Image (cartoon, rainbow, N blue to C red; front, side, top):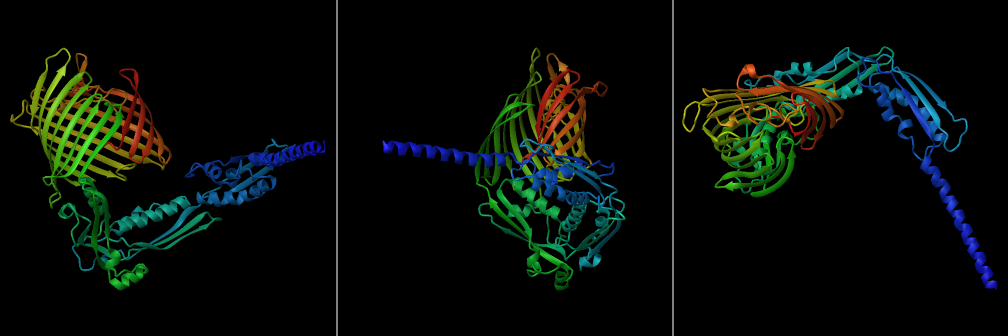
Length: 623
């Protein structure tokens, strides 16, 4: 009896303790999850001349907003953040050029401070007049002709170009971000050619908040002038070092030029022989390892001219490589691909593959010769293709010999191609055609970035002819030109303009392979229409014409560095005469993403002539 009583009392005590513990844990936990409930309203009218919205800057960086919803915030912490807000606002506004803002704050306590009561914070900011650049002192040291040393045949460094390129001129609003970017750009430009050891030895920005004037002083020292020395190659095991030497556009004694280093890098990558490439100039070694010396000490210790060895280190790819890929294109449908490469087939490089798409099937094999010491890249190859596009069924076999040369900014090629083609259109007889044209092509790129261009232009043109009836059913002359331009409108907007023209002259279009005729429509042509769906109507099919003209205007706005939206208008057509080139238009909206492999575009386009919407996907820079 006594034992049962003791046991019952123990159970009751344990239950009471459990309840107490549970309540003790629940109450603080609840408070931590909720925190103090408050909202913040920011009013910051943006002057028309303001470079960026001040309100968005404050909302993204003020501690009052960053800590809202945090479980640790109580009434005392909120008031501390509230008192600190005006100084934070002044600091943030100053980065945008506003040094004398008028700030009004108000904190409203809830009438009844219950758990769900809301505190209200009101911040009102009148930016005032922005500070402007009143004085600019840009001093360039060491960029004179004396830095050329004995090489009087070398063109003088264009110091005036550095001054002209300085973006932060007198009268402009002084922003901290613009100041830092301008300094980086100036230093970068100086280091690109001849002076890779250029440095900023003095940088000072003084702002008088009362007068709204900023005084800037910048001293840029060139350091020693650098010329390329002898080539040193490290890493080749299976493939001869002459492959690298032949692709090298740099000769000993050439003035240091980073674009030449990039050209060599690109050429080596395109060979497919190397998995890793490192190209450097041993300036430190040429200076006697003066890593701890200032530019002035380097100049005094070495004189004005340094010859630095050019060092190329490579790691070779495996000799044989196979790959499999899957994909989808709104132009040609689903895609499966198998590739096989061999880096040493009788001393040549083999690239081959089979691509199976819904509308097109292709097989190819190409043999690439080692680059010559003059920088020429020669290849021979064969291609077989079968396509069913816009009601036209085409099969062709081609054999081609090609020579290409140049750099990523200026590419040229010459191609001799023998084409044999079979064309079938429902309800019409199957036709055969063959041709042996010689074609010269050129691609000129003047853009700020080869992968994600935002400024500049690119031009691609071809001129080809099959002038004699050697392996040719119908003689012809054919020319094409493509132009794309990028016009930046501020830091977040870009206008993209695109145009394409094509013409084929021959006595008779019959006998000219369809691959040399023109059709329009699709992702990279006139959006809103099927791939190659614009041309000459023959029965239920669309076939190519003698002439082509398309154009496009697109406005892009980037909400984030990698994400944007676009609105566009396309127009164009293909026909057998210029007077029949009646343009068909398409327009719509799109999304843009700067992916790791290049720009990806997704567009919804309305084809005005067919009164239909069409979805388009495309990847990469057009050409």
